Length: 463
Image 1 (cartoon, rainbow, N blue to C red):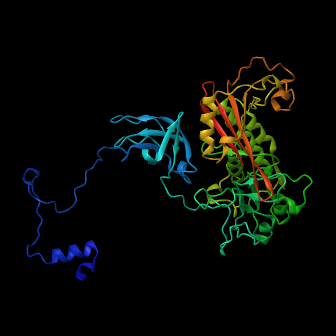
Image 2 (cartoon, one colour; image 1 turned 30 degrees about the vertical axis):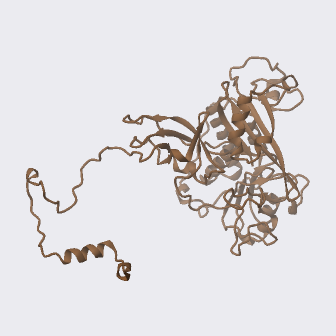
């Protein structure tokens, strides 16, 4: 019957219903014991919530929503399992970034948690929680490679339409022999596209004209590698030629985290931008970022491992080290100067070496360890299950036989068998392979640090 297709809003329907009632509705105030069978004239709201705490409506894991942005079945997020909130118990733990806490329906949400991932969208293994679906929509996210107004993906001959910004941060891949910086194929997109599509080329920088960034920080491998290169062969040089005043980047391989907490180039970049926005010059900002990164990794680990050392040594600044952002460019929330004084006592740098020694060649890796770490990494770097694997012990003292490392240089030739007050008792698993893409060879690396019980304590991947 067609008349049933004429829908009206609920409020309008209620108004029609009440308008046709012959009974006059009146209100009166009565005692509670006389209210049985009556209907309240207006909502009655309790003065206190019951229960008086946020709670979960599903079985799952309490998380920070930001830790799940961009998550998918082919690119899950990895969170450390930090405990459980039993039913009927208080949530005494505080949720830290990069962690998850098991929670049940009706359970009290831990402090700082702002979302719960349903159990069906997770998988637990070896003290880690794999999250396959985000619990909040990521907004204001820039996609790499950038999409221009005419639909160009950045892989053709036309320049990509880059966003106009005074500060440029590029978390991309780079190669020693390529001028371009590369994105990584969207796992949710078509599977026939290149694994590493071109995200940025020198031609794209030229197209910006006078709207190029004042400062560029690139996490790309070889992002600041300019030795024996022309402007057309290095994006860092092209930015400087186009008017960018400062380019900070790595002269070699660069490593970053796959999740929080920030590690390597991610951590250095974060601290660089904070220092720059507080009013420091570019040179001071990079110097301060390195000092604070070294301090933070010392606090976390008790020493600097090989990846920390490489990040601190390889990132350089090209351009004007005295450049300082103007008040107009700086974000309003950073307009108050926040210069911080370094500790009176300088940081005593402790390092470890994870390079293989001749005596350690052929050190067997336990099968259960390699199976576990490859399962974790394969979800972030597809195809790493057949990667070449090396397994070495981290050493607090190294004589640097067959290689050069800061630990060996600082030890002045002491024996590798010497004891140390910061001996880590950790092992390093390095997975490596190469992929051919558009005439270039893309190396892939994943470095996993395991404790003496085989538990994963740190993972970084090449940029």
